[in-house]
Image 1 (cartoon, rainbow, N blue to C red):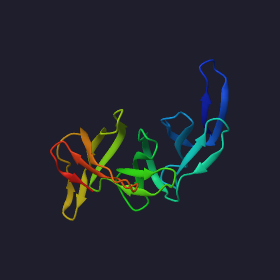
Image 2 (cartoon, rainbow, N blue to C red):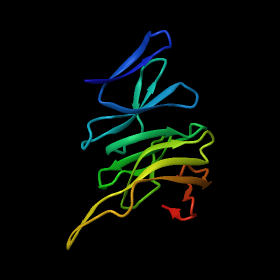
Image 3 (cartoon, rainbow, N blue to C red):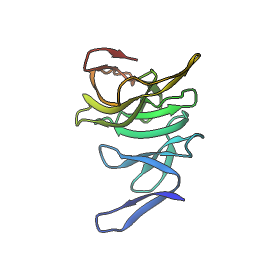
Image 4 (cartoon, rainbow, N blue to C red):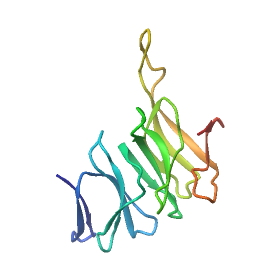
Length: 175
């Protein structure tokens, strides 16, 4: 059984969260950890853990079939994820408002996205984009090209806890 263990620099354990936690991420103020909790291909919840007490709370009602990475926005108002929801075949980029848990898909295409990271002010993020092989009505179709590191820059971010407008380096809009 996996556990999320938080330990201090001298090795003392603060608490441990049992289950199957993955993708832990510290809040900007260091008071909260967020992680995915559940089994891949089942119902994975986004969970916050209060560092001082170890108290857990699910963030929103959204459930994922896979959750790869989590990055906090610097002001603590939300999280960027690479995750696959129950209705999708691909891992996509998502924005989740914090603490409400309202989820918004940022990308919506036939690629896989993994390993998301934000720069210090969250005006840029990097994520590994992998085109997938597809099977069409006439047989297998090979994916074109190799995985690339895709940069996205935040052009605007609505004050109403939405995902904002993220665009690629080439200026293409991603919704």
